[in-house]
Length: 284
Length: 207
Image 1 (cartoon, rainbow over the protein chains, first blue to last red):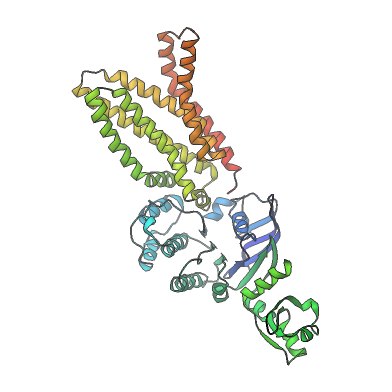
Image 2 (cartoon, helix red, strand yellow; image 1 turned 30 degrees about the horizontal axis):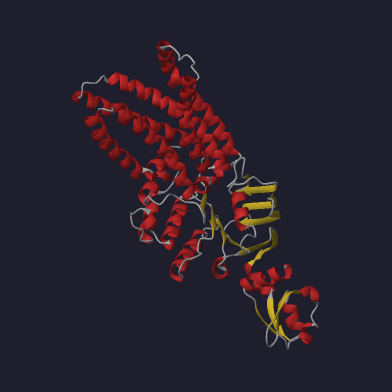
């Protein structure tokens, strides 16, 4: 399977934070969700991919090419939506189109106007746009570039469920031809559960896991039991625990094996949110 | 690069309109009634240099640099586009000032060449100021750059004042004339050097 993005041993050190040896591959035709707490290193990873920061170690290959040596060529084929960073509010979509036509080779004007129509975006200065409209405009620009890779930083945060669903549908459509990929950083893990094929979880600058979403959800489970039942379980399979008034909840690995060994115990499906939460608690 | 210059002008369209309206008002008030054409033309050029600095403020407000770096344009070209925008703004302002001077000369008994020469010197002076200020903005941000620009504007006046007070002999009219002629080529060389410094700063900058 070919990869559109390969990151190996990516490191970046700041005074108070370090990104340590991040490695993952994003195959063609796949959507990868990048999750983690605020300040965990998601945006730093994206900035490193886009060469907005100088990396201290590791290698980033996009379409098999070095992200610095072939930067301009690569960026012709990457569509990007950033949480922070866009045009000044006095500019309108038509002006943005003119700017993009002069900036990005093969920017598809007809496609851009189709998206403007589809998203019902008015031809007004973007200061009058709601957050949802702005995200739609950013996505319209990204999709009108001849992109093989989309990189989206928090595209759905602050949006209502209707707009979010519309955007997620578009993203799924984008990867249909099996040649394109999407890297999407998001806090809204339910969105990622809906569309992502892979989940990469970064915590405190380190990659906790990068795994196929289905096998991840298959592997982890929430065990609901009391203290004596919990003590029966192999400690290496317990990621973290949480006590409440009535029982103990524990995130466990190898859900199937535990279910087989202790058929009387209740093991429920874990959500990505829960997997993230228990990992964070363990580390603290 | 043309796209980035276009973006600067689209961003500043309201300000450019304001500059034109203010220029006309100033021409009316100071030009026709008081005959202070030199003041009007200096004002227009000064306004243009302020607009140049505003471009950086707008960029900061919307974190434009982050977005610019997602485009298939090199960092050098991003800086070059801004330097060209500033130069175009100054040329645009100078063209308006010259037109107004020629227009006023139709109604007032003035020598337009005298004022056109003052525009030539003024534009050179402002370009040298910008040559110092722009790399500072790229390095330390617009707030520091703006303060420096205001400070630098006062420097020549201070030098002249100190020279007069200390009884130094002022240069001859011929030397002043010679310096005036070479002021714009010198300013353009400074501007080119300034671009090289700013491009190096921007190349190593992290966002």
